[in-house]
Structures are given as C-alpha cells and as structure tokens.
Picture (cartoon, rainbow, N blue to C red):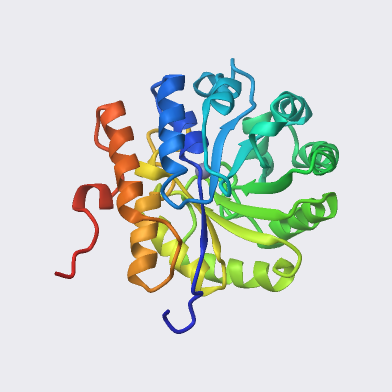
Amino acid sequence: MSPGLPDLVSIREVGPRDGFQNEPEIIATGDKIALIDRLARTGIKRIEATSFVRADVIPQLADGPQVLAGIDVPDGVSMSVLVPNERGLDNALAHRDRFHEVGVFLSASETHNRKNVNRSVEESLAGLDRVIPRALEASLKVEAVIATSFGCPYEGHVDPERVFAIVRRLIDAGAGEIGFGDTTGMANPVQVGAFFTEAIARFGDEVLITAHFHNTRGQGLANAVAALQAGCVSFESSFGELGGCPVPAGATGNIATEDLVSMLHEMGVQTGIDLPAVLDAARAVRDLLGRPLGSHTLVAGPVDWG
Ligand code: ZN
C-alpha cells in the first residue's frame, strides 16, 4: 500500500445502466446479458444492471425485466437497479429476486433536476421519503445519487452546504449509501478533495460515501485520486468509458473501469478486480458497438514492467 491511501477500494460497474443508457445505439438484450455475465466474472462485486424508467423516456433500457431475468451472475455479486420514482420501484419489485440494491437519484441544482425529472428538488426529496423506506422494507440496500454535486451546467456553482443538506435528508429517509455525481464533468481535483474531506467527516460514520465521476473534460481519474486521498473507498465507473450525458452534447462517459483499476493497482490500492478480464469485457463491447471507445487502457494495454 501507499502511505495515506486505503489498501482496498470497492468499484461498482455502472456501464450496463449509465453506459448503455447514454450510448446512441440500442444494444440487443442478449448482448447486454452476455456482457453483464462477463463483467460479473471479473472480480467486480457490484454491478448496476439496468433501470426502471419509462420506456418512452429511455428506450435503451426498456428491456430491464428481460435483462434481469436472463443474467446469470455468481453468488456474492450484488446487482442494483436504478428507479426514478415510486412507480419505477413498483415495477422493479416485480423482479425482486433478481437484484439486491436500488439506486435512486436527484440533482443538487433546481434547474438540472427540473430538466431531468420535471420536479423541484423538494418534490424529489418528498418522493424519496416514500421510495427509500419501501425499498428497505423489501430488504434492499439503497444508494442515493446526487447529480450535479460539484457544479450545474445551467446554474454553475453548487454550494456544498446545499448538497450536504440533501445528504442529511437522504440519510434520514434511510439511504445507506450516498453517491456524489459529477454528471457533467465540472469538478476539479482540488474541489473534490475538499468536498470529500468534508463529506466523510460529516457523514462517513453513517453511510457509505461513493464517488461517481465522468470524464467529460478528462479530469475523471484525477478527481478519483483526490477523492481517494480524502478517504473515499467506493467508486463507480463504466467499462470502456461507456456513457455520456445529454449535456454537454457529445460528452464522454464515466471514467473507464479498466483505467481506474489499472491506476489503483499501480498505486498499490487493491480492488479485487482482474484487469485483463475487465479489458476483455471492454473489448467485447467495443467490438459490439463497432467504434473506438474512450478507454485508454483498452488501447494501450496494462502497464508492463517487463
Ligand atoms: Zn454517470
């Protein structure tokens, strides 16, 4: 291990949801199932499989139930699904035996939340006050992701105190994990270091704190190091650097799982993940999509010290 860094971090693979949702192509259900089954055999212990959003809103994930029914993942791999609201939770609960965790979300900024889910932040929190306890009743773990935690493409600066007030509400509602999302890639490492230091000091004893960075402006891995040095031990990433976001248009996706794993291992931080196996999965999705992906390690290969 390196001084000041944790020995081990946990990575949730979000490519099958955050990635597939934001790719222009609709990936065939059988291909999704094969990719998830492959990812579940890389040592990754947490995978976000799909979401239960309206098919007319996100047609890329309309086959969520079929994907959940078809996957064959080893014991010990925790599957999660994203639910936007109570109806989404109801639809997910019809397949309760196929997953272990739910993700819920809102944005820290009013305008982003309004554009994303057509609700005020307060309306989203009121909804989550119902959704989270119901998920807990179904013995599900709940991660609440706060998008635009570090900046909003419409409003600019987002006050960390505003984000932390939302965290308090989500913890009080029963969330066991809080994900801080840099959905549109506005965060910088200095900001991230200060933010996670404060977030962990305030809430680290109560909930798992997770970092969700996008590589929109190429700063995703630098932000991950800053969060790591602040004590964050839980990250989300996407194989192949799949994903993106409608704002800004054409933006790249989440940090690539294989880039994150490669960097962490080189720094002496273990993940329990087999890098060549993740690279195989990233190669498979690149071949399926038929175009280059943002991942760097997929191009360069693992570091070889000879
Ligand atoms: Zn994301």
